[in-house]
Length: 216
Image (cartoon, rainbow, N blue to C red; front, side, top):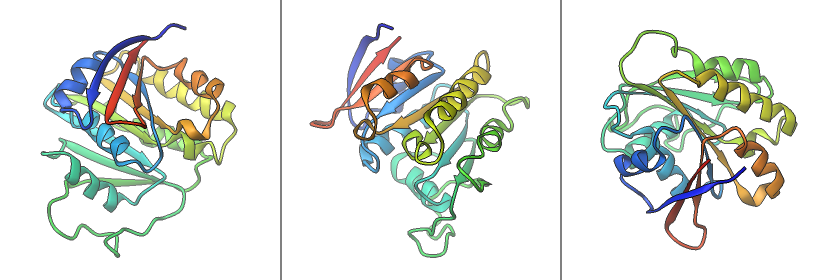
């Protein structure tokens, strides 16, 4: 597999710029350190891209509570999406605000869904694709945070089948999905395995403030 460098972008890049560079890729692997705000800012930039103007966002996270995800959106995006579904996977996480509720009114409205066990990949896939078949304007954007955490609970082969099935389900639909992977936690062979089913790779330059975008 050959990857073609497309561009280098500053972090954080404007959503419209990032969308233009990534192009029509329906699946991408965002490679960067877990918990790094640059990774989060880049993911929200993808979700908030104004092309098209109406976005239906599905955000699956094993790292934060739904309320914290909504606050993260408000920190990094200038406007709410048309709809926002936050899928909490695994253990229930306490909000940084203390009670799991929206407290300051700046966060977008959202609906929640839960998947009790990260190993329940069938339910996880259903939660991420609910609503994709219903008529709606705009585009569905899915952010999976993160594959590195998922791989602590399921074998790599199962995680790969999940990614392969999800990306295949989105083929031909008005939808795009990004997955996060921490390069410090996986050997290059494992990273390339997941890249084999993605259209694009976006790497966070650990030593600087750049995004390196490559297309297959």
